[in-house]
Image (cartoon, rainbow, N blue to C red):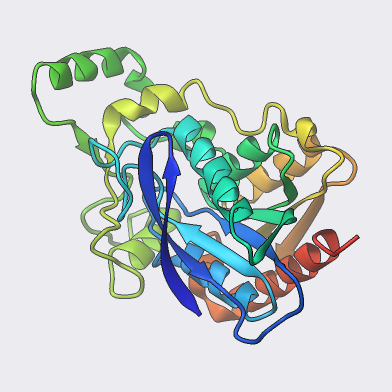
Length: 296
């Protein structure tokens, strides 16, 4: 069952969808917070990855990050990695207040960009007992290829001054307005997901406030992954994903108990919604959560 919920984060109210098991179960349930990709919303892949484990006895929460989707925050569209981590912590806090959730059995899942922010939040929040990612991305090296990234953070100060003078925030998008055979394959993948009926959503604009890149320049989700220990992180990625190296690096830095699980033939975006690849990924996730969120 899916229910619309609201919870606070840094003075803002965030919107989420809470998924609960269909049948009764004894005692409070284990729970999972699910983060979303860059500029994504809860109605897309994070909702899919929240819905499926709920059918296997978990309470799950997919939510819109602050400043995006149905959540509060002005201006609309900044991608603040530190606020994203805070949103994850506050989503966990919300779950701990629910009588149907066991606060000692909460796990987290980050997809794409939140595959960086979720483990980053978990490094110092030990309420997150099991940490997982799907198609994880560490945003600064990933976005280094964006034309505007090299000019940040120097350009950010000017943009902040413009906003202070009353101008609208400057928006940018990682996606082109159209694609053809000359467009890099990864961009065609993202375009096919976000800009076609396959998954486009009116609240997933695909745009972000450009000056927020200055915060990304200070952020590294992988630098202190060893702080997750002794909790066991699981990172899932497709063997055909250009972003697979991020998961490999994450597992290396997280320590001996970290696990890398690859889905044969899957690209980065295949793991968003292509059932052939999502099904084995969810099976591995639920097995992992079931083992590490089991009752003592």
